[in-house]
Length: 310
Image (cartoon, rainbow, N blue to C red; front, side, top):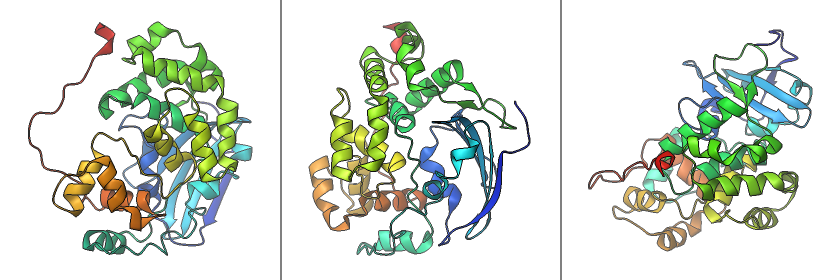
């Protein structure tokens, strides 16, 4: 822990009410994410590595449109330029033009009108955990993320909760030895993808200023980055309310069972959700926060794979 006096201390009044904790929840990579903690009252602590240096920030909702902001560390001075995205202020209409027909979506939107699609504008920090989640159980990917960030990240500035770390820089990710990825249960293919992305991290960070099509094209130009990973990054780093995670192991089936009472494959899901453009990811988030996104359990879960034994 470094100095406890915050470099930045302010209260922000948002243009529209926001459900801050729910809106920020997709940024958390598991319950023990060393870069994201949520307190029982909904206060969110996060760390990030900004161009000017590491930052720890605390966001505490004090009213429907009021958020107390505190930030510590060398990156705190420039943190305010990322705030509008983190508070959902850049979510184009906040869902105002979202007009679903399905009763479950109508109900979810009515119950959660202040859910926002946030935008971190930190591409590489969204990309690495998404790569780690490729083709493996989410719980295993979150464990790998925690192990690697805990070992190769840096201590969180300020009075951050115990165990919080600032994610490593792209250069550090690039230089992590292959056996360390192996020990963290990351197979060579995913490790190589992380390293390939780290080599072009500066170019990837530029996609925050590109249009949606160009941003996805640049992401997918890196070997190992497909439609699913690009969508996962766009949802978080770009605040893309339409980024649909096509290729997800469960999503199409969940959408089908939730909205139609039967499973769908990816192509059928894309076709079925077409009328919800440009709000397809918003629709998924609403189903998630309302507790309606589910599918029947027909058998045992697929086993977790331990790559450290291979």
